[in-house]
Length: 255
Ligand SMILES: [Zn+2]
Image (cartoon, rainbow, N blue to C red):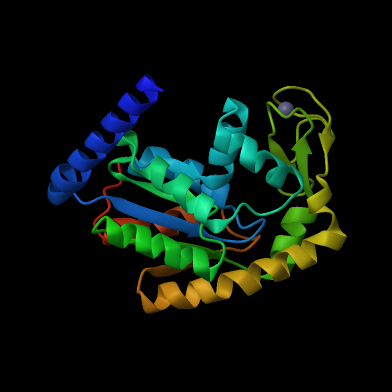
């Protein structure tokens, strides 16, 4: 317990230093990625990290880490995740706040997986407002349902969970059919990529996402990035880098 309290103390002290010191000279950059299943948020985030030097924070990954560590929080959310349920917003925002206030995230972050609903978007606004900050960019990867359906239903995932690489029967074929290039495990189609569930997943996403888009549009931080299955390689990334660099985000090297 003593160690925990000491750790807490340093965490609060270092965050106070960030908030009242560092951020006065160099405000952080907070980016959220909006986009439904198949939109390519995860891919974009991975490409952006080395180019703009901000960490990628996925709320899904944060929960998986908590579960793996066996913490009290992890034990609380484990059954929820297992049953495919949603972790309550208050818990998610608390976990996100804790992560964002770590010293390694002092320059901001690329947030993926949150917000998924308007109430979550409002919670995030409140969090940033409490820190004297605001959301800088909401990047919405938008495309047609038809394109996303093709992406999802053709997606194949490595059955080896440690690897988890994804392929596509049309756009990204493995060297040997049905076998992962990296670890040679068989490729499978995840249950939630089956054609009959893809449509409802996309509909549900759009119903929840539209109010966020409207809200961020009013807040003037929304940027809509069009994506299609005919995009040349790197097309989405180039659009995003253009948007960010035009608004003062330093891009480390050309993509
Ligand atoms: Zn693999």
